[in-house]
Length: 72
Image (cartoon, rainbow, N blue to C red; front, side, top):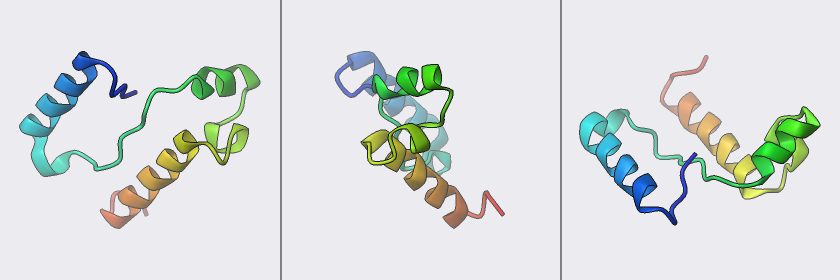
């Protein structure tokens, strides 16, 4: 989970991109309190809060994986 507010998260992302280049996906899943809330509810974020930016990020990630041919 990426938190753009922290220097650590930004540095880690930068190093991952430097190391793995094009293998790194464009989609970044940001940290949000909705994830633990969804876990407590026993539901995926896309069902628990379908209009939340975190749910959209997971849908974008799925689209990106499909576009790269990583998912059949």
